[in-house]
Length: 201
Ligand SMILES: Cc1cc2nc3c(=O)[nH]c(=O)nc-3n(C[C@H](O)[C@H](O)[C@H](O)COP(=O)(O)O)c2cc1C
Image 1 (cartoon, rainbow, N blue to C red):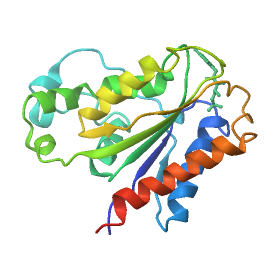
Image 2: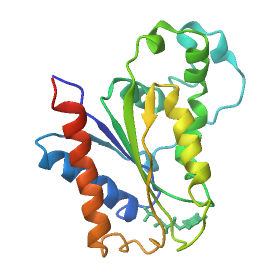
Image 3: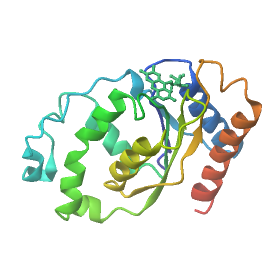
Image 4: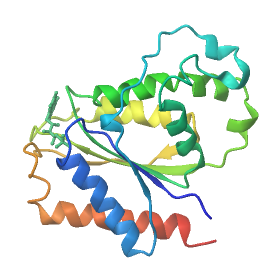
């Protein structure tokens, strides 16, 4: 069976705006006849990268914490997924700390990529999508740090971040659900992602 796309729920708060964005993206995928796996990353705790750089020289660039938590399994999902989707709130102009810790732990993949790992070299480029939600109604740079971190992290895995869908002024947990237009846009982007990436073989 073909590998399913993976949707990451990255808020630390369940049943809020990011969870809904993830569910709507999945709804869009399903409306196109597809399916996806949901990972609730916002509930997962990871060891922190300690900058030991052992991954620079380890076999397969393996992190010293690879067997200590679920991070490695998730990197492998990103590697094999035809596309990924990250739904995340903005916390202090950036990504929530669990997602950021997961990103930092991805340093092994940077080492693998720059060290010409056969696994990474053999990967085909695949798209990654994101919906970022912020409470503040204004702020030119509200999403800048989050988008940059996601983009360069995902690039280690040859996943190319597409322009982010960003929504300002979404603060209370029910705000996204009350905005039919935004909901429809996310559903449509899930449908389009499936049709674009999965319907041709
Ligand atoms: C710890 C924390 C930090 C936040 N920092 C920001 C921020 O810097 N800018 C902003 O616009 N909203 C900020 N917010 C508001 C959230 O981005 C907003 O409420 C979002 O819709 C929450 O998404 P969720 O329902 O998926 O958890 C913050 C919320 C929390 C809990």
